[in-house]
Image (cartoon, rainbow, N blue to C red; front, side):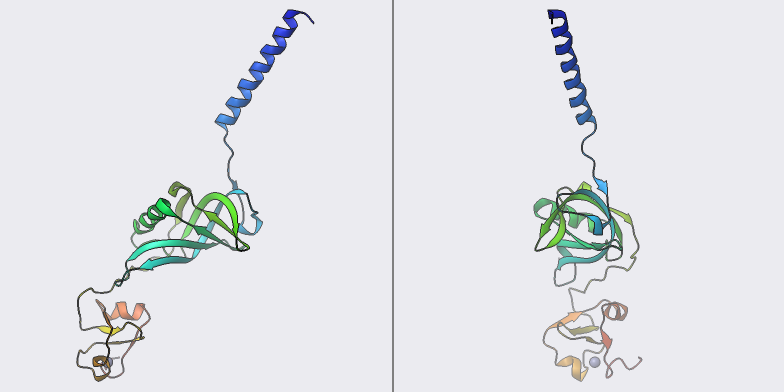
Length: 200
Ligand SMILES: [Zn+2]
């Protein structure tokens, strides 16, 4: 082997390295589209699914003030999306940025690495850019309670609403919540009081 050949080999290796590094740089590992039933621990995936349940914290007037977890379903199974720290705040802002806010039934896309917790697969959302609403299906309006007294009220712990402040049943309630309208009360699952909601 003469010097010329050595140089050629060295040059080839250098070119090969540069090409490889450039290739990796231009083609970072891409997430793979999968069904929830197909995912395995460690997979880097893109999943699309419908929000089945949102784990949120609300204030006394039903405003969502925190979000911990979103369970999605894609027809093949369920998977939890977990949020911590700043991403949690970002996600809260993201879901509240829509009117009505993002809810159960809406279709979303998530990108992330699958991990396992208590025998269940989950994705810990590491960046809000990896979470996206792709179809708004639930147009149910957001319902809040009135922070000041109205004449439509219920017990914080009951399921009947009243429309007369002098209703004998309503009067006994100690922890009252107030609605802006009867429609709101009904949509929140309260039934009209047989005594004071006589028009029913
Ligand atoms: Zn009543």
